[in-house]
Image (cartoon, rainbow, N blue to C red; front, side, top):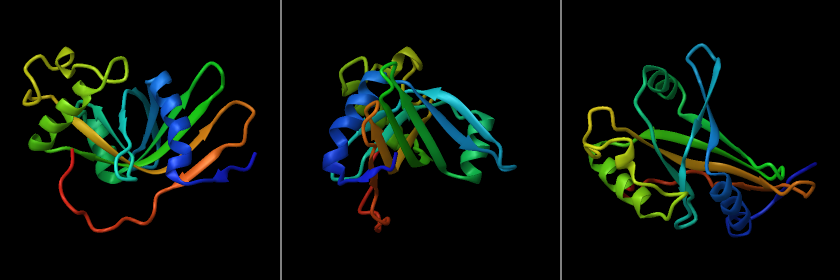
Length: 166
């Protein structure tokens, strides 16, 4: 079924409903040799200023680092038992130490089960040696209720960065 192109304001309610009810998604990266690798992750999505982005707690494993150094594109896929789906294609980047503190606070401020206290993973806080956060900047979102026409949003071309965000 062909998707219907929509503005972010139209797709956001359905995409949020699906991502916030399913919570965990399959995230796929691509290796330097072109092979895909999928893993389950728990992005917390923020929908500010027309630029949706997700924050994800993630250890800097050698595989993730190599994949994202080679190709910063990720594909996130959510599926509910009712066959509602959300797909988010995004650009991923590791957050620096300063940004990790802000991401930690942002994720902890969201109500569970979407948000959570990252201290359950890193009891020593955002400065723990293996503590890492990724930011996913959404470039394309497809949200679909079972048997309905998919909604499709595509981000406008990237503009110059106006400042640091988590």
